[in-house]
Length: 181
Image (cartoon, rainbow, N blue to C red; front, side):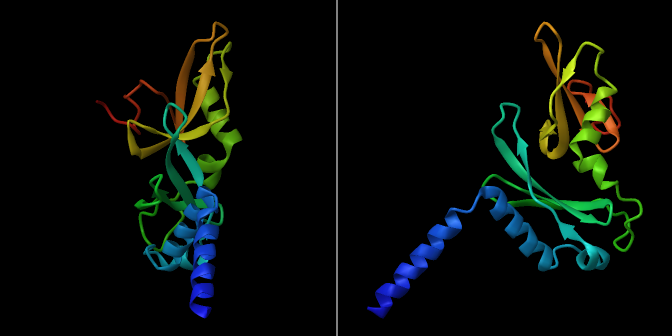
């Protein structure tokens, strides 16, 4: 009887883990990895915070990956990127020196949707309406960008990409961020 009860409890625990939203499981995995010292910088390990995951979308709107920011104070110092099955794709750091965060970008430039939308407005035409930013990628999943759809009155759409302080049209490969193709 005890063995059967133990098996039942184990099954219930497994089911309860499965019912957690995918974003929550991505967060828990990032937090576990963060605590397991995958992050080399002691300043980030001591003072850093893992934020709520942001879903990355394919152009068709389906889930492409998970982006999990790591911040220290007002700086984004790095991020975890997970596949849709929560495999770690990478931990990327913005630090040039593991013990210095001063050259890291301001978190608002990467995470604040209003600031991102303001950056996109630089390339928007006066008659275009801008969508809410969504996280996606440019060509390759490792090239994380925010996309804002600019819609003309005739319904024609184009995407404007924002990454940090860089703003460029989707098809413009001359940006310093994307380089020339």
